[in-house]
Amino acid sequence: MLIPTSFMPLPSVDGCHNGQVVMGGTIVQMANGLAQLTHCKFLGEAHYQVSHSTFGGWSGIYSTGSRLHNYGVIRSAYKGYEYNFLYQSTPLSEQLAILISYAGKTGATSPDIQCVLRDTASNSFTGAILDHGIKFTDLATQGYSYAPDDFVFSGAHFIGTPSNTSPTELVRPLHVPTSNRGQLLNLQVTVNDVAVSGVHIYDIYQVEVTP
Image 1 (cartoon, rainbow, N blue to C red):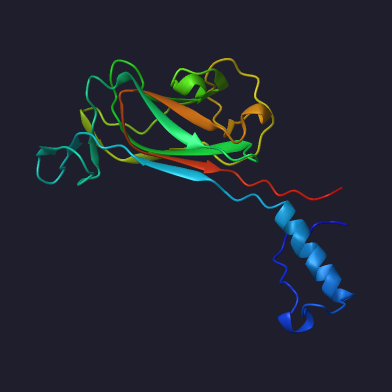
Image 2: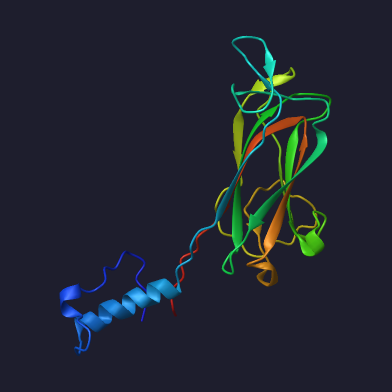
């Protein structure tokens, strides 16, 4: 039978006493509920706040640490700067959507953000590449060293196994290979003329039904 995708309430407790025979509609409700549980994907997610130099647009002063203002300072060091964010996948993880808040600066080259998915074998941030990832370009920018926060999103359109061997500008969710699902993964984010203030990783839910 097909597994219903809408919410299915369990049978009334008054009709399911211990030691009593149940049949008919009660059995159907129980079967539907069990089938939904066996095909339920409990979503995983991870959220990172990146604390670094900020700028008070209204006061003209610099500060560090928490984001007291929505202006990020784009330092010269933020060219080829690399972050590593850990994500604990689930055995059912297939695709990861990425949302990043950032401030960008127009410099000698156009700013960009690259996201690559790696494993963490041997407790290393330089584990094998699982997905060569995506590259955000055409970012919102300012021509000076501080800018207000903007956002980029990978989208949540479900894809098959990617075939690119370098970060693609056609943004998409990141793919988790079957053999790495349930493992601790590393989202490697490399920025050029970009100050990242937050990185959010979401496990995409894919509805499944029996044939």
